[in-house]
Image 1 (cartoon, rainbow, N blue to C red):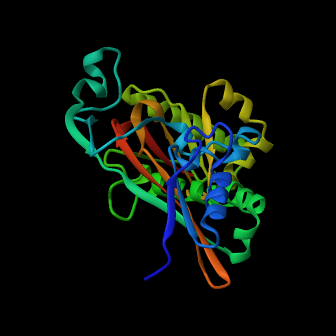
Image 2 (image 1 turned 90 degrees about the horizontal axis):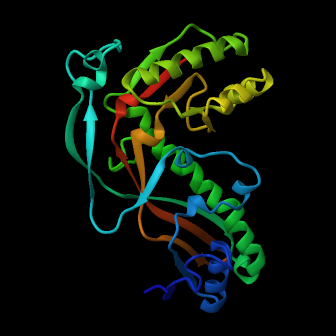
Length: 291
């Protein structure tokens, strides 16, 4: 049998005085050379310390959210109905006039990341705390972006790029064209999002496109329109996801995240894990643009 693991709810559940890395360092010190784990009553991906001084919204930050206690969450989902097309100038001529409502349920799944570190890290609480908060949590943020966009292996989260009802919009080949051409395609896609009655409030794109838009001076116009941009390598360079994120989906968190350090000889592994779910209310409020 392996050595027992010190596993406890942290001393500071609201994280008012210590960060999650500091709490793990305290637990490791208390374990006196053994393995240790702490349970944190916050989603770890919302606790990356550099986010407050270097804003770079994740997919999570595009959405509204809620905490799920217990079993699956029941909610109402609406899908396009027969005959829905481009909006007219009367309600009965809009796509939402024939939306089909149905009861749906969202399940939580666990996302996690494991990072190998030297076992000696357990003997330096300050270094351990900084590594967890600045390097481990940011890796979990990347995993979360991947799962929210592409789905989870167990199928609990479909992924925003795979939604039933997601609209796909081809565009001229503008990947190598001037940024203004790409901006025109983005603005047309934003308008297309709103054909189903939503408000386009967010974009998810690859950093390569984002920095082209920065160079072209386009960000102030996007910002003035209320568009939040997530740049992530978890989406292809020639794809942009646009949508009404706040009305279209709800991100779901569980009650606790877990940080753990386990050692084996001269090596150790830090694991960060947390429950995650996604309720999709209006998949047709999202458009995938191909550039």
